[in-house]
Structure formats: structure tokens, C-alpha cells
Length: 139
Ligand code: UDP
Ligand code: MG
Image (tube, rainbow, N blue to C red):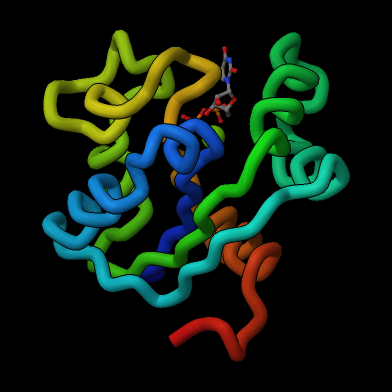
């Protein structure tokens, strides 16, 4: 059965450019409830583990460097059909291909610096949520 939670990150470029408030506004306006939220700075080991699935890809080193260059905002979000609806809200990986009004269309600079992360399955949402948050940090 599908769960109703997903995991998201506002990536270092969003924090650097001051987009955190505007992105959280869009998330709220789309009907997601914030279950957990923190500002944190990933270590190299954290980023490598989080993106382990991409370790053979040519962009892996650049991705780890980007994701560790400054703090991120990690969140757990709740809504019916959360994983799919959040992927729809953020848009395609490459902002050039992202639909109008999506977070990546509005705030992403490129396919690598693309403003936000959203889990791609219920299973990964659960793994990624517990990677970042303890049970005491989820409300
Ligand atoms: N990425 C990149 N170059 C690419 C594809 C992806 O730098 O050609 C980065 C980008 O930051 C992306 C992340 O790697 O968000 C993870 O890639 P994935 O294919 O899982 O995209 P997502 O699920 O984030 O849309
Ligand atoms: Mg992905």
C-alpha cells in the first residue's frame, strides 16, 4: 500500500540564493504538511551514501561536491499520494524540461544544480527519511 509521506531536500543552491522561504511556500500551497524539518550540512560520506545509487554515473563526483558545499534543508512531507505529487511539483530533473510553475522551472539553474530533491518511491522515501531524521524529530 502507498504511504502518504515523502522526503525532500532544498539543495545548497536554494539556500545560497535565498529561495528557502519561496520554495516552502509553494510546498505549503500545494497541500503538503511538514512532518520534519532541519537545516544541516552533509559530509562527503553522507552525500556519497545518500546518492550511492548514482556512484557509477559520470556526474557522481560533481554531485557530491555540490551537495556538500553548503547547508541544505531536509524535510519530510505528508499528503495523499505524497511521492508522486511532490515529483510533479518539482518537475523534471533538467529545468529546461520542467513544466511551467514547477519548483525546478522556477528555481533551478541547471540539470546538476536543480534546487530540490524528491524521493522517487515510497521505499526510498522511508530510507531517506530515516537517514536524516530520528523518530523524535518527526511530528
Ligand atoms: N544530476 C546531474 N547530472 C545529470 C543527472 C543528474 O548532475 O545528468 C544530479 C542532479 O542534481 C539530480 C541528481 O543528480 O537531481 C540525482 O539524479 P536523478 O536522476 O536521481 O534525478 P532526480 O531524481 O533528482 O530528478
Ligand atoms: Mg532521483
